[in-house]
Image 1 (cartoon, one colour):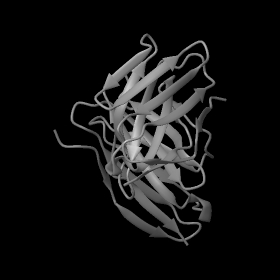
Image 2 (image 1 turned 135 degrees about the vertical axis):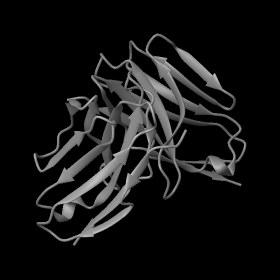
Image 3 (image 1 turned 180 degrees about the horizontal axis):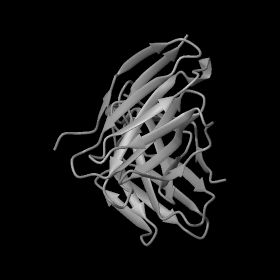
Length: 112
Length: 110
């Protein structure tokens, strides 16, 4: 099976802009989770989607949002970008149990 | 809120020695505890996991132990090799989310 894929891999934006990141899960996986990874804060949970429904979300401002499509592909959007949003954004997919998660390569976002 | 504490933040061992990384979680409803290895510039990779109904699990040189009463779990790597050098993350799962520890940078000296 093909692994989790994320696009784009690298992105440079300026403050105030918005960005949309995409994640394609492993075939058959219906759960997609998103994480922000920074050197100072480690891996922080953003939100989890299962069958197009958000089941849980982390402690991030409303500028961070996501959605999942009927084919399980997921997108996350960050509006009004801030310098502090510069990070590696990772998605992970898993089967119905949401437990064993497999990570994608990540999208590295730089906000200038 | 839920929290996972991980220690130590850095660990340097001689090749062939053992390495132990410890984590403590706060949410008593946590029922699944994976460990991930992340090499520089790469994605986290699952190396071993344990569920709340099991106390210990071993896979070749890697073992994980879980103490539900103390809300504590540990990763043990025996006969360490230079290729074990990486950042290791523990995590605890409940309510459809994984909470990660802050990571341990393991350096195995040849």
